Image (cartoon, rainbow, N blue to C red; front, side):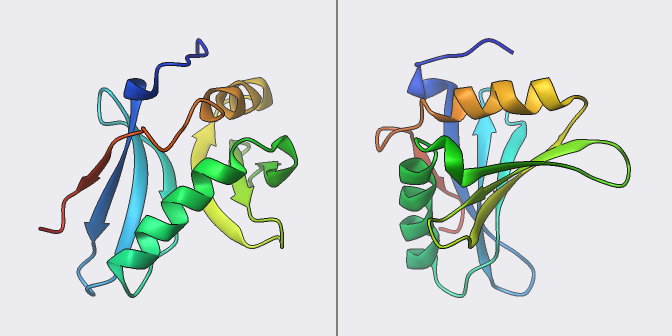
Length: 118
């Protein structure tokens, strides 16, 4: 995976699940899901936590790279207080996961947010 400072490479998408809870995902230009949020009661919470993801992605200490039971690697992005903001699905290697952390640093408030709940 090549690192990019092009914020148009990624976009956030806000959705609603079958139980009417909101969540967001970070996707790439091919709509591959790269990062998933928790679920929220209000859309405004999603919008607030997207900004928090952007802010916390600049701090490498906020990331936790973990290996799951299926031997795949995942990334947890945490707040300063240790709350999980979002989870990046599995990577084949730890190196792949760490490279993706570098890509996440390119997120900014200019990263597009698409609201699919309208």
